[in-house]
Image (cartoon, rainbow, N blue to C red; front, top):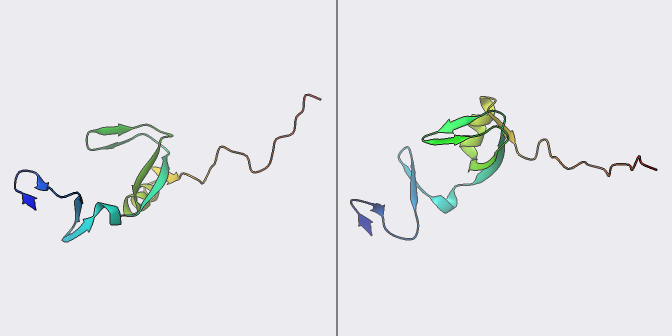
Length: 86
Protein backbone atom coordinates (compact mmCIF):
# COMPACT_ATOMS: atom_id res chain seq x y z
CA UNK A 1 0.00 0.00 0.00
CA UNK A 2 1.34 3.46 -0.88
CA UNK A 3 0.85 6.57 1.15
CA UNK A 4 1.38 9.74 -0.92
CA UNK A 5 3.00 11.59 1.98
CA UNK A 6 5.30 8.82 3.20
CA UNK A 7 5.88 6.52 0.22
CA UNK A 8 5.78 2.78 0.82
CA UNK A 9 3.97 1.92 4.06
CA UNK A 10 4.64 -1.83 3.86
CA UNK A 11 7.40 -3.55 5.82
CA UNK A 12 9.65 -3.71 2.75
CA UNK A 13 11.37 -0.43 1.94
CA UNK A 14 12.05 0.23 -1.74
CA UNK A 15 15.10 2.11 -2.93
CA UNK A 16 15.22 3.82 -6.28
CA UNK A 17 18.32 3.47 -8.44
CA UNK A 18 17.59 5.28 -11.68
CA UNK A 19 14.43 3.75 -13.05
CA UNK A 20 14.73 0.49 -11.13
CA UNK A 21 12.99 -0.11 -7.82
CA UNK A 22 15.15 -2.33 -5.63
CA UNK A 23 14.28 -3.88 -2.30
CA UNK A 24 16.57 -2.64 0.48
CA UNK A 25 17.12 -6.28 1.45
CA UNK A 26 18.31 -7.06 -2.11
CA UNK A 27 21.13 -4.50 -2.04
CA UNK A 28 24.43 -6.18 -1.17
CA UNK A 29 26.62 -4.14 1.15
CA UNK A 30 30.32 -4.29 1.96
CA UNK A 31 32.35 -2.86 4.83
CA UNK A 32 34.93 -0.20 3.95
CA UNK A 33 37.40 1.78 6.04
CA UNK A 34 37.57 5.50 5.34
CA UNK A 35 41.05 6.79 4.48
CA UNK A 36 39.97 10.39 5.03
CA UNK A 37 36.99 12.28 6.41
CA UNK A 38 33.92 12.18 4.19
CA UNK A 39 30.53 13.90 4.22
CA UNK A 40 27.43 12.25 2.78
CA UNK A 41 24.36 14.46 2.92
CA UNK A 42 24.17 15.85 6.44
CA UNK A 43 26.34 13.07 7.92
CA UNK A 44 30.04 13.56 8.59
CA UNK A 45 32.23 10.44 8.76
CA UNK A 46 35.73 10.51 10.28
CA UNK A 47 38.92 9.02 8.89
CA UNK A 48 39.38 5.44 10.09
CA UNK A 49 35.67 4.69 10.51
CA UNK A 50 34.42 1.39 9.15
CA UNK A 51 31.03 1.68 7.48
CA UNK A 52 28.70 -0.61 5.52
CA UNK A 53 27.79 0.76 2.10
CA UNK A 54 26.20 -0.68 -1.07
CA UNK A 55 28.75 -2.33 -3.38
CA UNK A 56 28.49 0.39 -6.04
CA UNK A 57 29.15 3.11 -3.44
CA UNK A 58 32.14 1.17 -2.09
CA UNK A 59 33.60 0.96 -5.60
CA UNK A 60 33.10 4.72 -6.06
CA UNK A 61 34.73 5.55 -2.70
CA UNK A 62 37.68 3.23 -3.42
CA UNK A 63 38.14 4.67 -6.92
CA UNK A 64 38.42 8.17 -5.43
CA UNK A 65 40.88 6.89 -2.76
CA UNK A 66 38.45 7.84 0.02
CA UNK A 67 38.07 4.27 1.31
CA UNK A 68 39.59 0.81 1.18
CA UNK A 69 38.25 -2.65 1.98
CA UNK A 70 37.89 -2.91 5.76
CA UNK A 71 39.78 -6.23 5.84
CA UNK A 72 42.71 -4.93 3.74
CA UNK A 73 44.85 -3.71 6.67
CA UNK A 74 43.59 -5.78 9.55
CA UNK A 75 44.80 -4.68 12.99
CA UNK A 76 45.24 -8.29 14.10
CA UNK A 77 48.64 -9.78 13.22
CA UNK A 78 48.75 -12.82 10.98
CA UNK A 79 51.05 -14.66 13.40
CA UNK A 80 51.46 -14.40 17.17
CA UNK A 81 53.91 -11.80 18.49
CA UNK A 82 57.00 -13.08 20.32
CA UNK A 83 57.39 -12.28 24.00
CA UNK A 84 60.66 -10.32 24.19
CA UNK A 85 60.60 -9.83 27.97
CA UNK A 86 62.26 -13.20 28.69
